[in-house]
Image (cartoon, rainbow, N blue to C red; front, side):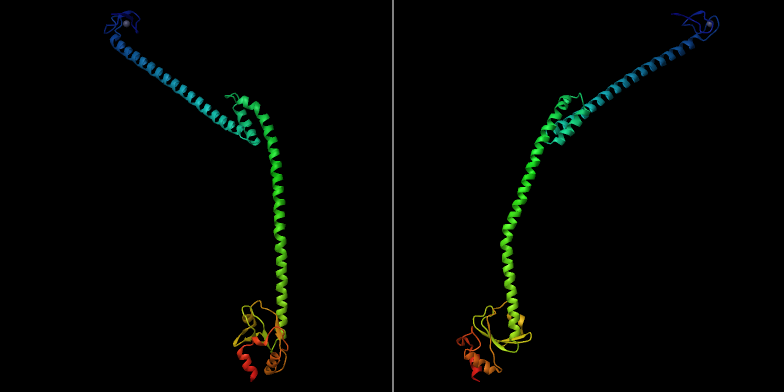
Length: 267
Ligand SMILES: [Zn+2]
């Protein structure tokens, strides 16, 4: 049993008393309510304590996570910077210098930073030399190609000029041949593929060779030998007589005449 001061009249009263003997205040109800209040306060304090503890833990974890993320970020920049630094390009080392300066103080970034300038200088020197070599090789390549081109093209040009001249000569000879034998019988020593003389009559663009009619183009083709013989005379019989006598031709021998020609001449 303990004595408390009555909250109503302030006189001492037992905490086991139902009511205050002095003023009739409900001590027992008061004590029960006070106990409840204390309990609630106690629970609230515990909750508050746990809440704060949890918050602190979360804050600590968040800070650690942030620290790890920052470390990862710096490490990834550091690794990229080291890669660029060790490459053989001055531009890459310039980039590495930039990267190292953003993580100054991290690992040995500052040592690298100090060395970047020297390395950029060395690499630029090497790159200048390489560029000179590349330009020189390019020049040599171009000169060599031109030289080869000239060596190859000179004979090709000469040959094509020769074949052009030959073609012009054949075209001219053919024109002369066609115009000079209009309406006449002629023997041509050889049309490509023919081994013996053939009798040919030309009339305008039409040609009869043996018994085969056709155009000049069809019969003679694009090229033919122009060693032909003009046989003069006004009638066919006369012409063949003159051939037989060896007149008017210099390439056809009477021995080579076809049987039908011999028959024709006899008529
Ligand atoms: Zn009282």
